Length: 436
Image (cartoon, rainbow, N blue to C red; front, side, top):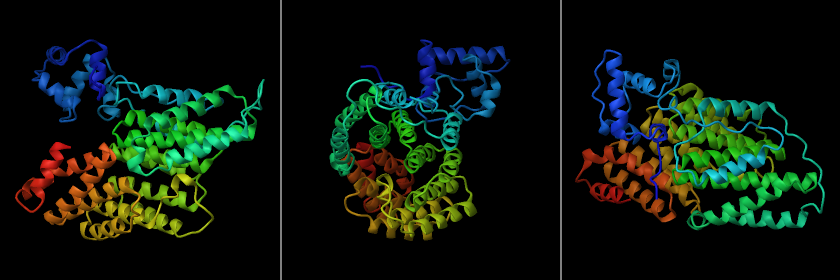
């Protein structure tokens, strides 16, 4: 079986049939043409493709020369976003839902795990969503339309699949994909009344959003982005603005995770304007605060946190299902993570600990994430023993529920534990992290 292609540089190279030594040779030749010398070799190419190192300015210029890319793009776009192979989302429009969903389902088999949407394209899609009203669904076509009773069954099944606790949900990937495929086929047939069509689109949006989170937790960011993209089309066609805003906030959360907080903030600013329910608004403001903290925008971050707390305290009927889990525990922990990013570890540590203690037992994936945050806050306070204990708990949970993203959070902490070797629990943690 072919290896996965995890980086745009590897994709650009493989499309041209170049092995790593061949690309290194071409870079050295390009350097000579420019009157320069380059020490790029196969090992350095490997480091770039595995995110172990980033090309310096001269190497980026030479790579652009080798791949015949305009040097202005190198200056305007961050590495590696100017390399060949970035993708563009399908624009919103009449009958765009099915192509977007089928693209997501098809991409699950794609070896190019890096191929996320470009930042510019995602922000553009957000603005299009905010300014475009959904088309009225067409009336039933020839033949017997999809029956409301069948949709009842599909919705009930979807609710069971998406509502499973994390330990069970990790085993339902095939079932969820098949269920989403069935709903997509029914939408594609357009053999339904307008109310039934709206329900089908809303169901497809919820299913595709859930599948997107599964892929995200597995570290498959390209696939996650496509499922959220398909979910956005479905939610838009159903007319559910809050659901669409929530899906945009998922894309923004991913952008922050991938260290692109400015793009996340741009997406969230547009999404918040079209969010109605206070719980939904609270979640979006909280995710905006995380992006602002990563950008170092302390005043804006605190303002967003205050708004998130205020909105969460409002009561206005049942919140939408996609954000019904939002709780004071989430607000406390993410507020603490914001303060960590802003350089306030003592207050951050208190908030993260308080929030983790409040978390319901059923939310083990979130608990694994929170425990990794708690470990980070203990580390910054120099409390290595407690940091190791929290990190071990996080790693144990992450392995149990099959969430590589949570495992990666603990692995990322491992270098900071190095200076505490020999302290209680630290060596055990480092051994477990290497084995995971």
